[in-house]
Image (cartoon, rainbow, N blue to C red; front, side, top):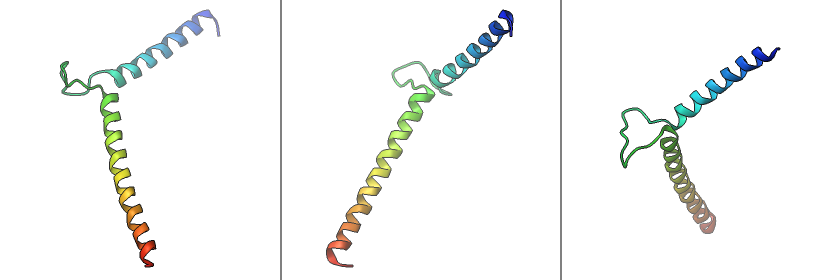
Length: 74
C-alpha cells in the first residue's frame, strides 16, 4: 500500500476511534449539562456498581444461611 493508501486507512481508523469515544463519553439521551450530567459510560459504571452491591448482599445472605445450616447440622 502506498503513502496515500496508508493515509486514507489511518484517517478511517481515526474517525472510527473518535466516533466510539464520542459515543461513550458523550451525553446520554435526554440529559442536560448540569450537576446531574452523566455520560453513557458514567451511567453504565453506576449501574454496574449497583448490580455488584446487590449481588454481594445476596451472596452474603446465602453464605450466612449455609453457615447456619452447617452449625445446626442440617
